[in-house]
Length: 509
Picture 1 (spheres, rainbow, N blue to C red):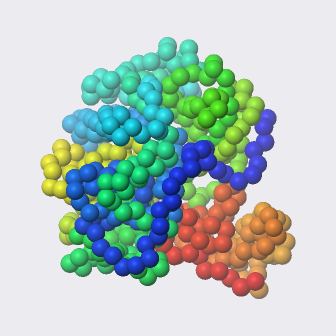
Picture 2: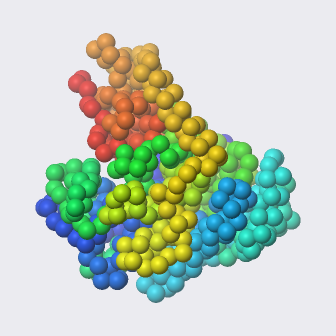
Picture 3: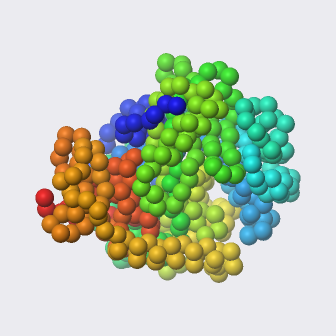
């Protein structure tokens, strides 16, 4: 078996050199300010700029630095075993609307790529969902749901059994889906947005919003940016206390390894509905080699420390099933799941008509993110949109299944709050080896420590600056991950991923 080593690195990020944009270094104002230069933020921004609005986008790092740059980049309306579930939870009409919103996002993407001549490697592929060992009855119900909702697909068991080199008991297909290079797509959107008159600020982290008569975003560097309307498209809303979003989102982490495959690797995009989860697709590198992307190993974010094992499991699967001998890169992504599995897109709270949000795309931000951008641009311009109520973040009354999930999410947070406070270190900081991290004893206290490859020791408080949970060391990513709401911090405490906006406190050496 090939043993993976080194630091995680996204193929999408590594294979695309983008344009840099300056940070915001003065107070300013725009008609609309969008926080986050991911797929939802940039689709919204370009749509508004093309309609003549003065739009500013602020990004904490750089374009595509967030989840969009770390996915498998499947552009599909097939989101696991979801349609039978949605029929039961929200009804057949809304389940059909969910499918249609995502299909319209794919159609929009195709037209946009052609209209703007975006070189993002967009290609049509069928999407397959299968089970190998369990959930056959659930798959049968999903196939029936496809028929009820008039989804473009159906039973594909024989087809997938011929395509995949291991046991498949049941499968369903959704035809005419797509895959692309997400970072090249976002870089293209950013360039067109700026040409259209928009303003993009990188390295400009928002820390809070003052929701007065005119919303004002305050940045980490102290500068302020006013707007008539604000869109929070930061994956996890950094302004999450407003609307209690921290209590309505479950945070998952999943993993991807890329390895070189031959031309026998099957066309199509594949995903297992049973455990362990497995996701398959391919792309072509710049030198024409075929690169397989193997994803899966989903778990609650911040709940596991030896995360390198998840990458290794995927590498072993790729080697055993597809004889992959050479691996290119490995990386991971964080996904947010709402109580009812439908994203929250629209006015953030019922009492503030000036602040909007887009979050909770689960693992399907490529279509849900585009659908969110189209909906937000309509909401902000007073244009009717038939998906408004489906995605409304203020949709009222928790159904029984939603209430159960709400209780579970917040019980998990309470447990993690208690567990973290009693965790103790079992070794001294001086004993850390190069490229090793974890809880350590230092001056009689338990702190977070990491010794970098050059031998420098970095010590931080492990208390998350969002709501006080204790973060856990992520050995593969060299990060401190919060098990409560998914905030992530670099080895030196810098914020990597929200909702936290302040770094971990550094400890004296």
